[in-house]
Amino acid sequence: MGRPPTNLHADVAEVLLDEERIRAKVLELGERISADYAGRELTLVSVLKGSLPFMADLMRAIHLPLTIDLMEVSSYGGAATETSGLVRIIKDLSASIDGRDALLVEDIIDTGLTLNYLLRYLRGKNPASLRICTLLDKPARRLVEIPVDYVGFTIPDQFVVGYGLDYGEHYRNLRYVGVLRPEVYST
Image (cartoon, rainbow, N blue to C red; front, side, top):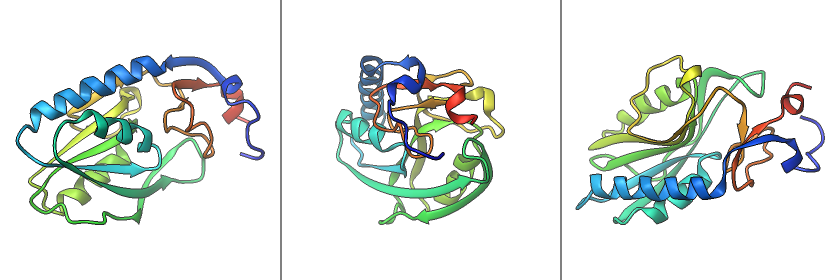
């Protein structure tokens, strides 16, 4: 990408989801998850790095005993804005999910290729249950059907950053989700 951006906010064409809307949705998802898993312990699995802010807020909105674990995968090929469909696990789970209820926490689902791979991989670890919670769903780009149990927001096919989502490792720290100006990523 070259030099780091000098003004993160100026690179955003429009705010798609402001901080308040995100906070309200996370609380709503936390209540639903708490009700669905009442009386059970849950393991939240976050896929680094993008889903980290969402998982941090979501776990505080869930009123159950829970544990967390982190995975890191690489799924991008040559272009920084397109997934290759080839997935490499960089960091695997630290603890076993065998016989446990697991909830995979994602920042965004677009093509579904990476998530499809992760689902197959995690099912091989014999969890009692495995569900998906995503903050953002971008169905216009879907190449593989994925059963998503908890969706925060369905968004249009636009390149978004903020609240964990990045371009060139920047913009993750924005407190909102915004549409990145095309001239930023097309140069």
